[in-house]
Amino acid sequence: MSGDRRPLRVVLFGDGESPHLLKWALALAPRVELFVASSRGLAPALAALLPPKRTLLLSQDTKFAGGNAALLKTLPGLVRWLRGVDADWINAHYLTSHGTLAWLARRCGVRARLAASAWGSDILVTPDHSALLRWVTSRVLRDASLCTSDSEAMARRMRELGAREVMTFPFGLDALPPEPTAKEPRLFFANRGLEEIYDPMRVLSLFAGAAAAWPDARLMVANGGSLREALEARASALGLDRRIEFVGRLDAVSQSAIYARARWYVSVPRSDSVSVSVLEAMGHGCIPLLSDLPANRELVRDGGNGLVVADGVDAFDVAALERLAADAPAIAAANRAWVGAHALFGPCVDAFVARLEQCPPAPGRTPLSTP
Image 1 (tube, helix red, strand yellow):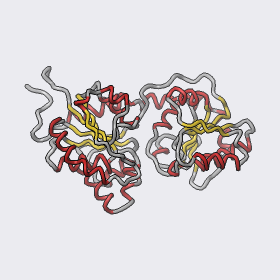
Image 2: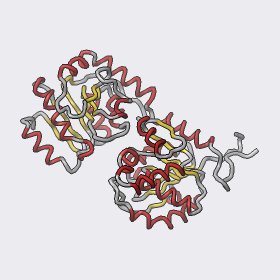
Image 3: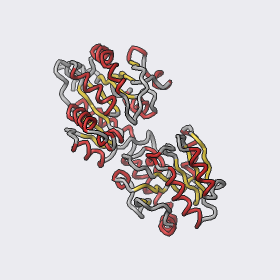
Image 4: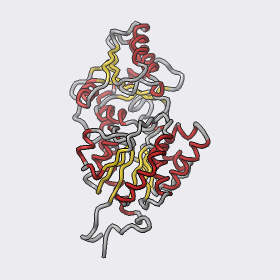
């Protein structure tokens, strides 16, 4: 590349109100000439990051569970805006909504190449709902010059559905948190959404097994969702309402403070890729107790640096917890070191942008450098 190189122009396309898309935007903004198209609005921090002329708001109420056909009505406006931007790449996040629109926009003549970033259920769940959704997902993946995945298990599924090239890296931490100084040996923490897919009822049942053996065991449950009232009732029915605390949605500082105190982190979703919450917990020196999913087994060696809870098991094996507790400082140090080496987001985005720069420009685009 010569000194005349122009910056890579990238449109980040997704839900602009999502903290996950904000994290991608903050990482990409110093590295590329960034534009953002949002299916909804913009989070305040994202609106402050870019001038209005670099953003497009489609103002739709998108739902990751599906039912986003109304988004198709926004295609003409999206195509007009993308033609004006004339980007090198559209980086679409969540493939069965934003990825589909990006693929259709390219079929309507938008020249930018497609980088398709999968989030989890768009690959692991949605394609199995119907033959149409499987076909659409496959078309998006086949059209993408580059895809990203946050687990090897999801990357394999993407290749099965037709992806050509998949970069796999976790949706990691911005920085490794400070080393914790005082863990509470019997404090458990869970912070996934209080919805069926995350199986929070099972979290309570698993904790009940530890609580029966450890009278000083406590569980803190963060986040919100439709099951909160039912969970509070269940905690009372188990006789654990004084030992299970529901703390609601937390800001980053408050959540980090609980990570730093908790010895144990519980996450037992029914379907998931590599979870940033699990990575955060490991970075704070928590011992992860996870459901038996392929992505979780990429992070945890059962009985080594955490516990993988087999399907159908509804109480923690306290003897296994005791063995882990005996080596807790060493496990915490090893988990933190792994996160520092493999799960920091900045270096992963550097590699992603470098790969975008290596790809030949789309037909009609100006090369990234001139002789």
